[in-house]
Length: 88
Image (cartoon, rainbow, N blue to C red; front, side, top):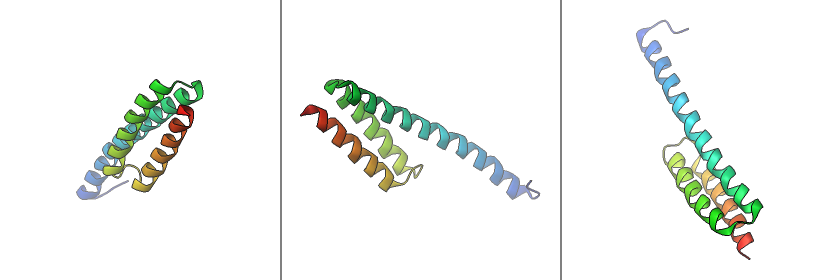
């Protein structure tokens, strides 16, 4: 447990940021799941719109360093490949 005032404040900040980052990551994972589900169902139009949403959320999370920018780019690339694969 923190003893100094600055350590107590740091703990409060960490808890707030942790909750926010968890929410952002959860939202990103949900968007990715929707893209993969649409691709698995073979729904081209739905997968394209879901991909745009997922790409936006990934970019936002990477910009805020919630996830690593390279991880966001890699995920976007894999999702894009999957969406293009069902377009045929």
